[in-house]
Figure 1 (cartoon, rainbow, N blue to C red):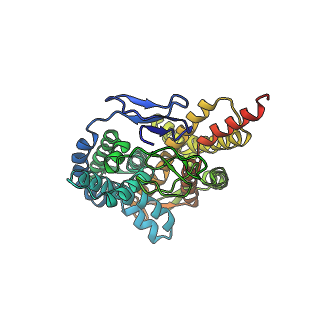
Figure 2: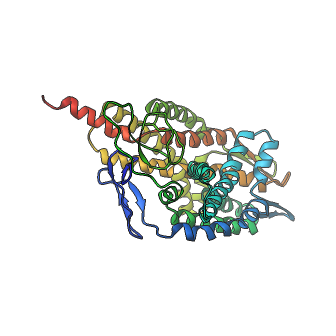
Length: 413
């Protein structure tokens, strides 16, 4: 309904307000950020989006890094590693890297650019812009340029002990692209874009006895009267009171990720063949190498992103599932914060996967040195993807629903 919104984290219905510039509208119950004050955000985001387009071919197609060893040298682009992985039969790993580091960021930038340009027209083609904006919102967590850049830093730190290394044009273009995309996200208010595309109209509450009820759209946030399974009148997404089969789907994904986590840590993610002698590397041994080289900040960062974060996600999601099933009422606010943390940090575990593809692409010097991918890398990529899907399938509003039902059952009559 006009003037009201539903908190996506706890289900509380409250007045929709537009916070002033630099301020945030928070849910009074779970403290989730509902909206940020970003006046004129779309106007400043469009020039940034247009400026990002020349960076794409520079970042993805030109050389990223150059390595020279004993008179031999090789340059590699972002796509070199995935191409070699594909040639060696590691197609799933190559596909994950190409999608998350190249294709999806480019598609998201394309969608945002078209939406921002369309809104400048006197009569925006809303029937075309709504699906594009919906797609860009779904692609947001899977476009990982900044994570790839951090993986590049880790690969660089490993290579400087092996040979002479030089950062090429694509490295600087990738850093610039990351900064531009971060500025676009900082300036854009998705709610304001949805309101510009299809301003919500005032509608009456569902009539008594009808099947319609107030449902908050999970994509655009519109609170409207409708029936589960119907389409949102603003963005066209399916309306659901709560995410369908949320607990069952999350549990299945968590269990699958937990099973993959064991081989991901025990099996080597890569083997460095140096002068004909192969040295297998697991995730933990890679952290030990960074620490032994004196790169403690980077070692701590990789340990946190590749080992601590997956464990935190698995244990945290398990705790959320158990407490929701039990209808626990205690520490609801802490559990809501835990869910937001899990949802935000999961993508950063892709650092090791991106580092591996960079090393595979650049360390191809025949008998001198070669990096060969290992099965642990595939398992680890599966852990990251499954835990991200698990956090997205979990509906945090169910925690508050279960606590409320438990309170009603225990209340004396």
